[in-house]
Image (cartoon, rainbow, N blue to C red; front, side):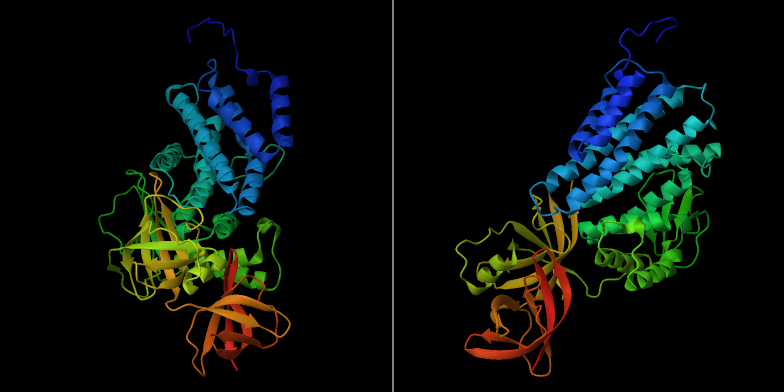
Length: 487
């Protein structure tokens, strides 16, 4: 814009009264409506009249902060409806918002790169760099809900902001991101949070545990650090020059470049153990509000395993295999398929990739939302004359092209439908183990079906077996697997 040029159509948000009304509407509307409105205003910066850089940065930051309560509400709506038809909408809203927010911060960063009137140590520049990294960390959870990796563009934007702040000496400059609150954060702390989420293997967690892992990382981020020198124990490395995603270090290269940073999350594993004990005593702090204790405990176990002193190793070797198979969900439907009473049968839409003694990996060009969720119980049928097996989804990775690969853990190679009775009522289940005197068996049934502490009789064809129900060893959407003792 040339000197003396008059902006005839200033951006609507430049008007204080208009901005106040819009922020009030965003705060009072339901999350879906508010987030759609926020996306519209963030995108408008690319098409409306040119804004002075300080005003543009201020408005983007204002909309960023206004979105945070609504994003928390949208996440809660998604988690309460993970397997419902609306879950796709809630996930799309979160991802679309962060895509628009990232583009808006790109616009601000582009202006800062050519505006030499803003000093490298200026608070405005430091805050924009911090918010850029913070937005990438916020997006990480929504990407994980879809079992996708953070896009290279978002990761590189965060790394670039970190490098610029490092050169300017502003990595640890405290920034108050919320007006009226004393809580401050730093670029270094927000970047460590992003790295921690990248190194948490979120593709092995159910959506509720992904949310819990995000809150755990926030809780622990003050105790996590990046170092210039490698240390003993499980750790990850990041090359700030190549902008590659973090990689686990099984050994340290002697000629590692000076741009390498090391992340050692094993330092907080003892803190995870202490937190797990606190939860066992029934003390779930306000930081985990809205999440069940079992979800937090499961996320703690997962992070302790992933970040522990010994990297997690596969128990059995995988072998490449080929073939097609059908997958089915829903305990009732699986029972009818195993018994042969089903009126319909799912198509063989999945391809075998590999197999081991404990499970197998499958892939599909289309991501089935009913199957592609960690913790889902599935029936798997290989070939035209093969038998049905019972398995749990343990890992999901989706691609930008819309396909997915799924890791399945075999629960039972010979599942058998059974009719159960405790003397007052009867219900159906699936026997996961052969009946052998002196051994226990597992029963898959609907949640709460095995609530009786009295002995239960299982009808296997013309045979009756007496069982004593025990604890539920696995539970998930629409099912639980209960250990039983033969009497």
